[in-house]
Length: 230
Image 1: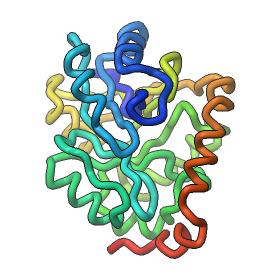
Image 2: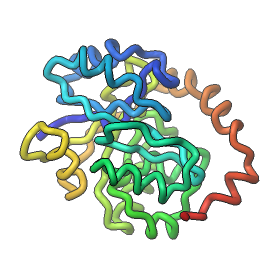
Image 3: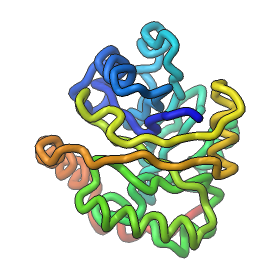
């Protein structure tokens, strides 16, 4: 049973934490591993491989697509941002990676309707993100969504600060600690979630950056593309 935070950012994208700080905090909190999922870059991976010791590092990326963000886990090279979501998913799967939909029911973060999700070959739903506002409310919504879609659930911290690494994690019943077995276990739904909300002081600190990011894409463009898969 492995405890892995599947949604962690570093200062290679918009986090204030270095790769070393992220890894040190993961060890301090007793995690077996983390997935580094910086926004549209995998530049942190080189540092992570050098510093990881016995910590499992799942290479990943939080990829911006025209329809919203996806978590790409277990990939070897970055997925280009701005693709249509189906194209991005296909590129992840071509690298034997898996696709998780992060924070799927929070209106300002996710624009993908449930009817659209049903048509996509995704591998799991992020049921809990530690940086989520109203965490219990959205946890219930996310779990119900996963049940309706018959998809596995995972959890991650969505950490943008060293202190919040490991606030949420996924407990994975994997037959080994190799990345391929971990990804297979997630796809098979051999997961539970361990979670607590991150402190509100960190949620407040990250809010300005979130608003700037949202404003970068015109609302009309978001609405137009929201449910166009191909």
